[in-house]
Image 1: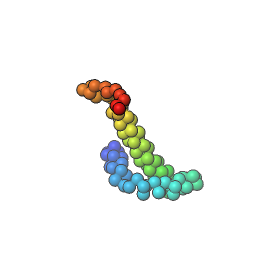
Image 2: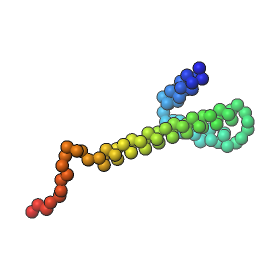
Image 3: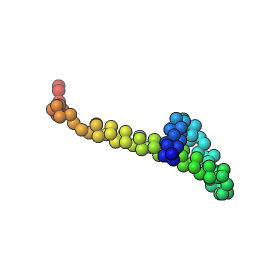
Length: 89
């Protein structure tokens, strides 16, 4: 039950626009920094970290994609022979 609820919440958050979420980050950060143990403060803390989680996820995806592209670029194709440059006049 809890796992399903959390996964549904994650799916809803992933469907939102990252730029719109990022614009809300400052709002929640200000509420979070002005500590008052109220339900609104607790919601702001959760919202802040949910938005931060989206940013971390996107950074991980970008880093992995970049890493895979580098590996593909560095790997030589075994069917091709290495070509050497030569001067042509």
